[in-house]
Image 1 (spheres, chains in turn red, blue):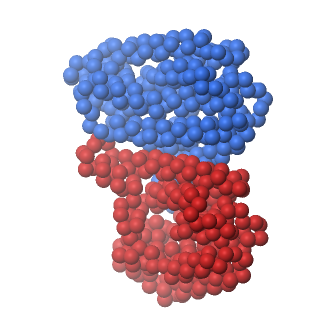
Image 2 (cartoon, rainbow over the protein chains, first blue to last red):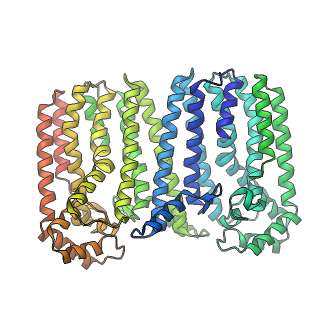
Image 3 (cartoon, helix red, strand yellow):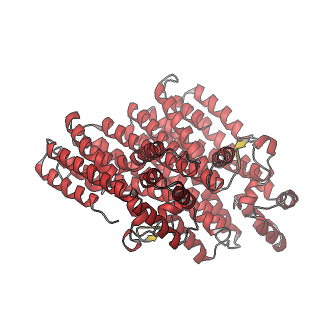
Length: 308
Length: 308
């Protein structure tokens, strides 16, 4: 998705689709994403990713199969820390060569650096929210969830890839602003969908166990709305479930029902619809190449309807 | 040390000491070192660094003091993964601006990228050596230990900082080769000293517990020589101690005695002396600024005599 967004951002500003520069940039964004996911799976203790073992689990299994010494779990985490570091370094190396070949190396690298910084700070806010004893003010919880969503995900998944593609083919400030009006709501909708899938998603489609976000204690907007909508005893039940690694499938099912019947799910779903409408309306207004516009609309609809 | 080496490397090739470029490069190298150490302390489960808590332990303590939820140890590791990622990203950002201000941006960045790659690959070889069930061939063990030492430490601690300083001020191939003849043996001597300190160092001076390398199961050259010099039952005792996190002070003391009386320590110490002589002899031959030469000689002697 990031690679395709950067490609359309590039074409939308007049870049030629066969230019190797944009292919390098797309590779760099996918490598950066790989680095973020590999380390994120350590932070979230995720066993699976895209239906296969996460990297630290894969190294752990390699240790066990080979009958090596010492703790397989620690070896897995250690090797995954290094693998993520390597992907992070390589992503920058590839991106630098794309930026240098562009007409605006300093602008492109500045945006890339901003993206990196935002993701890392956003990830820290995310783990902090999981462990800090929460206040019970729903408005504050919603605000915090929205901040994490923006910096940890929306901006680097959607906003920055599109902007980087644009800046690499010399988009001016006006076009980049139009990109932002399209991509900012789309990025938020993307992550809200992810939050819905993290609780209600079909494991066979998402490649992750049902209710994984609940076990990890993710304080998403879905949870913030529940604080607002549920009775105190129901809120206490949700709070007790959040971050419990041993949450049973029955307990997951019970929390799903609370989030659904209380109206939290519907609120998030209607936010996704509104954000999607705003995004598509902004796209219509954008002064850009028609082919790229059609491509971006199709991609936006896929993101808004995604099931995994 | 890395900052100072890059500074002398820069001056040795005619760079002006007040140029902000070399200060940026020095900052970048120290940030890179910080990233490597923060992640390395996770891999090695080190509780302390430079006499203070390691970063993951510091975040863990913060969690405990604040009375946050979930597992403090996991929060500490997670926050330290992100802190290392941030230092890694910032180091590259600062280095890129130094490289761009130099006469050889591509050469400087290429060497920086090579350094990053080597450290990460070297770290992986290091953790692999800790867990793989070892063969008993001392020559092979020595070879493996030397490879890890080179890539994990010698090159990025000494060889590359000096070379990066040189390349940033336009050193030609001949001067860089002279740098390498001085820095390659010095880098190896530096890490062999580190290996000695990791087993025999005074905790009050090193800031790390006595025998930490033994508990971590580091298969250093010291250990490789022990395989060669000790009796089979003594070798078995060393092997049993390596990687045992609960090794008592008495057991550490017993292994120290075996490494000392068997001659392994003396072998490593004489290697340090030989490497130091080769390094200083190469420095005499190097066609460089006399002031930088004097500075590098003083630094080399500090490295060769270091107690922490």
